[in-house]
Length: 500
Image (cartoon, rainbow, N blue to C red):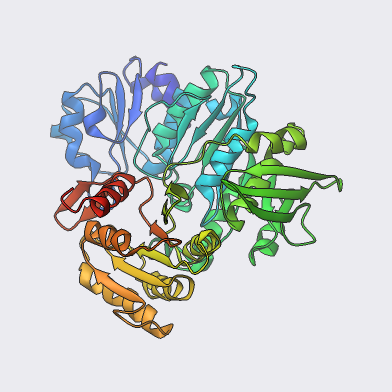
């Protein structure tokens, strides 16, 4: 697209005739990713100002620099035009969406939000919308743990739960160009508040639950709730969890909605979730009263609810409920989400649970998996440079729902890991825990995992919580490569052979 047309159609310049008659190849906020013909948006970030990299962007061939400054760095621009805007974040989304032809209008985007369960619900929804008997049209998925176009796995566009706006729009364009009938888009509160999801036309929204989280960023629970609600206000229809205390707030929005849950008033009602080999057997009722059965290869009541939400969404999109329910049985699972690495003689499970409610649900599921007399052991930490208010509650939950907790590091970043462990231990003591009996402290995560596995007895369940599929462990001196599943397997090998 021509630069002048792009800027005009994006609504950023009333008279773009003064701009070069150039062809735009990309929109980016990362100077290292500028290629000839790209627009570079010099945005002020949390730590860096993009204007410091204008010279690099120009040297790489940027055709336009966009930013909020009244006094742009003229020397660094070297003659490349500078377009001042009031909101650089919003400009990224508008430019990228316009460059790609507003791809969300060429497919049906389903946004999934909530404190916990976003990734699993997104993946389940993507799966039940697929027709295994047909290759076309595919369904696309963009989430924390999985990026899929049909059954293919393109490279992940970014390192956030919700990537930057230009990456979101590029993925939507790739999906629309491939003929995807639906795109399931995990939509975080950060992504909504930071305008990464501006210009996405949502056909349907799914909301799973709401508990205090990311208050270091949002400031208050009300602001966090409002950020999540932005998705529900923008969608044409919403699927809402009736079991959650915030249901009435979101159900009161103008957006038409359908509810799901175990609550007898729910439109899609979970009637039963019984443990079964490899997962659980579900029974639920559709809004018309017809009951359906399904096999879900994931344990846990919370996952049963996630599955009902996915079926409700698929039904709204035209998939018969019995067909969607049948597709659940072949769901392949998600790396790092209730991933069972070993079932006997004791179980080892890797899960991403990192909030108190999510950890409670995971540990309750582990309790149901434990053999007679088996103990639940959990390795858990709390992130540094993040909301410290959830550290003590995590310690309390670990004490209430597990028999032994191994408190350890989890992306301590610039915070003192020993101070984080002290907060976790304080919560454990408040819940009646005792150091050396119900909890121990291991600042090094590898040591914590190996100790928990070495301590396990037949019938026990060892839960490694908090990291899931994440590929790095962030410490004060930088990020180091990390593989939670690999560490668990190494711990199992070391138990069999201490020299391993």
